[in-house]
Image (cartoon, rainbow, N blue to C red):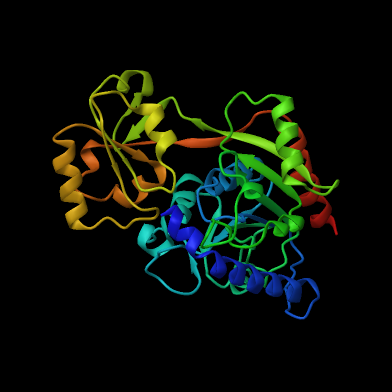
Length: 340
């Protein structure tokens, strides 16, 4: 696989050239971006998948939703619907996509919408009888037809964009210079203990502008797994033989947190839609044991025949330090732009 990526290096150079031209045209105003009067916060990355966008969006929802009317707008990756869809009681993961449906189920007071055309999606949200005061754009860092007021760029501790290269040789959607658009950079999936010296080394490697803040977070796993009708402490379940199931970009930390030597693990592609054959394979592999999966996979499996033995483990994004500074930065941006 690595050899193939190196062979494709000329295509990476060409792809980088094309994306750079596109960004240049947007920067110069030749290609038009639409701005909106309400606060719009975009969360995204330079690389393909696996940086923790969902827990970051959920962190922002928890921070803001007690004070403001929030809407999330996602593309709805791999959904089976088209155009603009506003989540309601008839929605499911096939209509919205797994991550937006997760938002809808966890945060009933938040408007959740999907639209590949983010400009149209925002306009549709603002045409509702109850308009949102803030819109959170999920995975929209490269969607430059909308000009967000605040950009949060995520990069994974184990796969920094500064160490990466353009697709298809590397995993970058655009060149590293795209980081210049970020209002704030969040280094995700860090070890829980990361010294100030290590943080400084990473900041130097990212080569950001003086005005750009950098924060460090880690994935905080819940102490409880949740099923249809019960919840069980992780400490109780760890020693039990079980099937661990994940259809996410980087499942290893999930497995490591729960796994013992008697467990079996099954992996599927990110955002995978489970077929009847998949469900049969999972049931046979579980062989009557509990099945523990990620929260994102659970929303796609909870209506299946597996539900009675199915559980999920929630996660959240936690800051190593300077959380109050991050919160204050977001709240200041929102307040300033709501008063404008």
